[in-house]
Length: 115
Image (tube, rainbow, N blue to C red; front, side):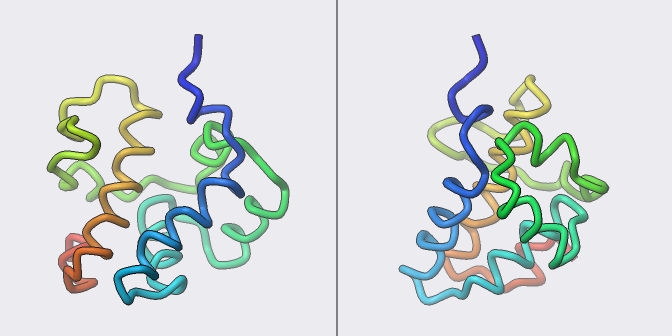
């Protein structure tokens, strides 16, 4: 059976990511920037996925290109080391979560985006 997060609508997950960042003084635009960096969506593509109500699995399957530096995202999300996650989709979800966590913790954008 698939983990519940795979079948959740991305349009339900997205506002939670924005909320997490905004609570700590970051902006929706910054959240969009990190999601677009990770997935390769442009602004219009990201908002189209949200309005189409795709699930999280489809959101990542249709992503134009996962950033080649995504493997540099390391650390712990929900007690799990992101670099050790074996399921490729779950790893992408955790990478996105980790990027938003780092944003919320006040890391400078260039560090979050592994520049």
